[in-house]
Image (cartoon, rainbow, N blue to C red; front, top):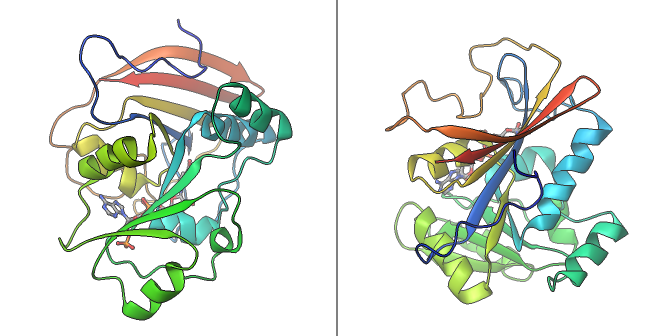
Length: 240
Ligand SMILES: NC(=O)c1ccc[n+]([C@@H]2O[C@H](COP(=O)([O-])OP(=O)(O)OC[C@H]3O[C@@H](n4cnc5c(N)ncnc54)[C@H](OP(=O)(O)O)[C@@H]3O)[C@@H](O)[C@H]2O)c1
């Protein structure tokens, strides 16, 4: 098994027009990521929280869906000075670029992330974003608004690579965004923590959301690393 550290992008054979995408999640033993009302549910250890930050610290960009941003009210920083120092030693800026996706664009400008300026914030959305919100957010973030009703995630990744030099995206979900990326075969690595709880609940999202449809294709994942710390299992899959 390979190390769970930053897996090398599978370069060489063919040039990637998009960055490597590694997604990180924690789930219960019955495969739930949260409860049905998508409140903030804290069901993992300090070790897992550090694991998430370590995965984030590998990214040139960190990517989240609008609901996760809103519900968890995250700033997407790197609170550990040693991780920031490692980034600088690797030639990265101290913090990854923060990337938010939203089709509707009804993003609350008073969220915590917009009160910080330690790293650029990019918002990929559509011209459905209300004008008032657009005006407020444009003071705090760089807006990429498409006239299409939905964002083209593949194009967004290409743009991140071409315009911002992003080679590695640390995706932190949520499940709806992860599903969209999976459907487009845009996920290269899955870091999954299994935590020792069962939630139940038909409407509580699993890794692929609450959508009851099958994925358009079965996705095969190869286990490349596994580590047990306390009662949690930390898995790293290469997604094919
Ligand atoms: N356990 C874990 O590891 C973990 C990790 C992450 C999140 N979570 C939890 O998951 C819940 C949120 O997950 P979720 O699945 O409801 O939401 P999500 O994936 O975080 O966000 C969904 C929203 O993101 C935007 N979005 C998603 N896919 C898109 C696409 N292809 N193109 C453009 N925009 C897209 C849309 O925003 P608009 O509606 O604005 O158009 C969509 O409604 C929260 O409770 C959070 O705490 C758990």
